[in-house]
Length: 123
View 1 (cartoon, rainbow, N blue to C red):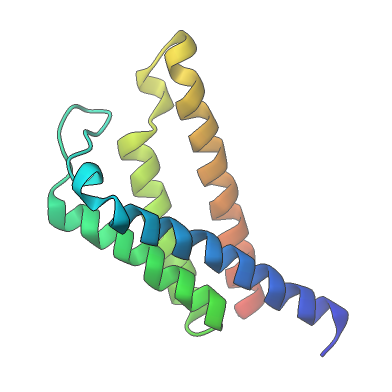
View 2: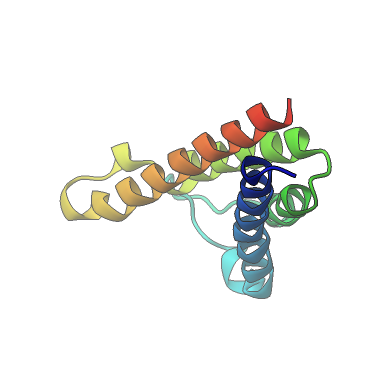
């Protein structure tokens, strides 16, 4: 295995661990997270919250083990787009209230960019 190939595998595993750990943490705090209000004032249905956290775990495992990485990455991209639009819509806030939402939006956009690179490498 070349150095470049080794670095891609290590990077994909680290990336997968990010989502796996996030999903596990979300499920371990599920009682508090299932009733989180969206930026629009309504609570996400419990089943959808659980599905989102499961996508984090399954998508993370997909990246870690290199199995169905394109589908795992696509599922994570969909999760990130929905989570960002529902919980970090920075256009709904002004001033200092906008700052954390801007930060999380930028982080999620960066994660999507990384997932697109995972997809490109897998194709």
